[in-house]
Amino acid sequence: MNDGISSTHVRRAEWRDTGLPTLEITNRYGSGVISLYGAHLLSWIPAGGREVLMLSEKSEWQLGEPIRGGVPICWPWFGGSAKPSHGIARRHLWELLSVTTGDDDSDTVTMAFETTEPHPLRATFAVNFGASLKMTLTSLNRGEKPWVVATALHTYFDIADIAGTTLTGLENQGYLNTVGGFNECPGSPDPIVCNSETDRVYHSAGDVILTDRTGNRSFRIAKTGSDETVVWNPWVEKSSRMPDFGDDEYRRMICVEAANIPGIRLDPGQAHTLSQIITPL
Ligand code: BG6
Image 1 (cartoon, protein in one colour):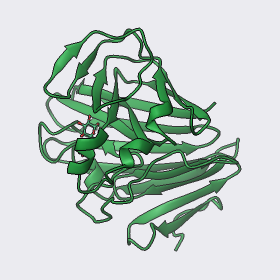
Image 2 (tube, protein in one colour):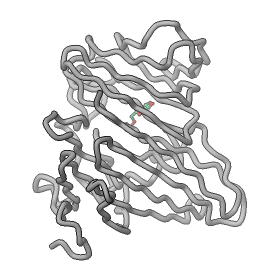
Image 3 (tube, protein in one colour):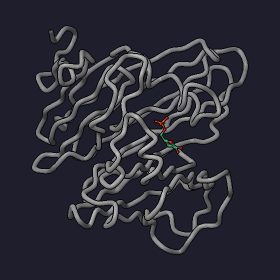
């Protein structure tokens, strides 16, 4: 069952009888689960703590359908301008490249996905399970002409109550508001609080602090190689329209996504790396 994996911290498994192949990681920093389908993070529980990633109870668990929650990888496009929504990477099985244990006893799982449509591209995703959860997504243009690659690490945070949740770090940053159209808006001096549908692409390369007051915890969401941060909560009506999302689940999630939208222009042979590092505070 554990073919090709030498680390004693990592074992092959299956997600809750769904048939989807996963790797389960357990080390002194906590535990995590990543699915080979979509290279999709499903769980991260820091030692002594609680689940950080929100997964919908209504998620589909079928090849060809995206998983709702965790960390979907949006690649090589973002949103619904092309089909399927958020690109193809989250709807394919990825190849497991390696599992390594570092000198600090943390573990890194690395996977890859290649496509020729709409252009020859390769994605490599490495996740380091340590005191922080570090995700590194590298995009490579394998084609013979330049190509624009959009990326997002669409992280669903599990929060106790959206009413007591704030984001700081995006104050005074302009954003594209995609609720009810596409409108560029000036930033606000206040921390972000969601009290209606929120779907914004912030033009920001900085860190965000997520504070879940009801759940009594907070996280630093740091990133590199990312010029945008997406903040999303579907609120009441959109939740009821989404077949793979519970009507009330918007209360216990918020997405904060390190992203590049509309994307990074890569010359032939050129690569770009985006990383997102989540640290409990
Ligand atoms: C967010 C987008 O990142 O993802 C939203 O900003 C979108 O517009 C959401 O609704 C979920 O997308 P999907 O394709 O997983 O339903």
